[in-house]
Image (cartoon, rainbow, N blue to C red):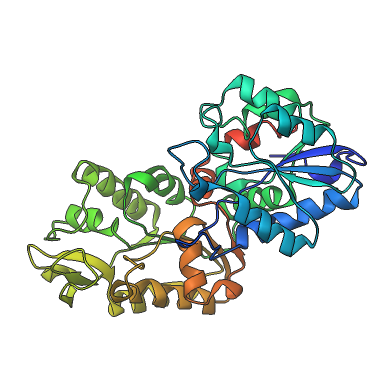
Length: 398
């Protein structure tokens, strides 16, 4: 898979449209609580500025129901970019209206324009041709540096690429790094290769699990999705999250692992609670003793120790999904223990975006990880072996 990369095309003095992923967490007062995604885009932006370009930045933020809802404005992003880049950021009032197109047309060398939230326009998520064409009309070159949305066929990710030839579109440094990393991890890992899969549902990770089993040496399953597997083994799991219709698939995955000699680990103890509530009465039980009307909300210490031992000889660790309801302190210990174990290992450690990236930031382990992806869903689709819509248009013929 050979990507057209930014460093391989001529951009000097040109107007560059960069699709970024500035979908960062904010508190209720619209203060950015983690700007990693913004900082991840700086290399590409600076490279363009250093080549005497003018730059148009575009991103979505959240899922606004109403156009131009102030809560979803990118103004806090413009402020943070100004702080990080130490230069003026022109903030557009809208996306493709005439006044914004006029500002884009008159940009001078070194200028940076940030468009308003792309999802304020319904054409973005619908991959509308007219909207994509207007976005493309602003620039000479298109750069995709938004790995986190490259699995979505949206106007600024996929539709826009139809208006640029291969010498005028490319992957930014962040996107290229993510694609190379996952391609290498999945196709040429240093063994033993261990995958930790968590999160709430099997359904979202089913294809990834099927694709991982033949490639890994060990697979560790935690989080809410583990209960579908435990139920498949005939255990009583109380009111824990179970996807009944996927029990046959869980059996199939366990059988496949057994046939291929892949060691599959499931929790041996869990923290169960009377209700899905931070204040609920909770207790530690073995997986054979989950009370009938209780919820399993975290892996227990014996499971965390078991997983730690299983990681001991790993040379490559791929982790996607927390081990419990880590947003509630009472049910975050299992995820925290696994995070520390991954951080302390000598393996190449790759964290697959989303909740897992958030988790390792909270546990203070992010600096110990080899690579933290900026996209949860996108990294999962790469593991599934899919070619992402936002990447397909940037592939060179081999």
